Length: 316
Image (spheres, rainbow, N blue to C red):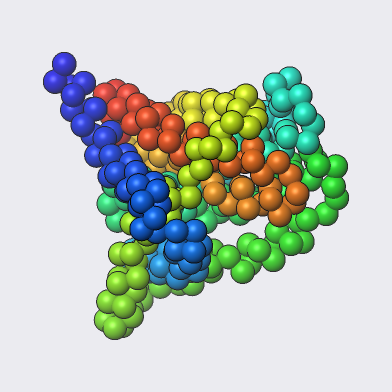
């Protein structure tokens, strides 16, 4: 019983703070203390300034030779691609509307790595977890974007789109900040104190502001539309996909922090960027929003259970 309570306590130390801040975002929006303009400006500030600063400062002050796990990154890329292929094969059996299949598939494999995933890993493993998760996020996010364009184009019967995706990846502030930090981490160069302190001020804003905006942007009224398709995608995102990746990781031999990072990143909710991409491509944006709402709230429960089980089995 004591071991169970310890595992339960461990899991909630990871997801509990995130749930509190998300819930605060919901409350502040309903109380009209923050509004859509705040969410829009705050989200842009996080994406373009504070999150890149957090990633740059964290990675640049870490030795890549000690922190980067090439095997974990390669496994994440291969496993994500395999899961995507499985979802493409099974989608026609569960999603009748051809034009909605891409939306469901994207919502099933594409995690919110940049905000929720990083927050999970930082809560669980501190700065070392953040660095390991950042390197994982950098390459897996690129694959997410490519596969998302492919599946949406397939379901919407469109051609092209990859050129725009490549441009988006090159211009992505998160990717730029990670790549800019790599020489400092690889060569172990020291940053000027002024740069470090200034960057830390921005970095400390990131997770609270990002989670507040995420919570405030949740639209529970949207759940009335396409609920069945959204539930299918949510079940895949929160249960099936994480279990497949975790079991595969355990079979390969991942343990400790590397298994924890894999579990936390794969069990994070569907990325908010999936809604933006679906809307831009004139797909079923309401369905994409439903998937984000369901997985964002459900992830707090499923991630807690996953981490509790892994901790109870002494795998992390």
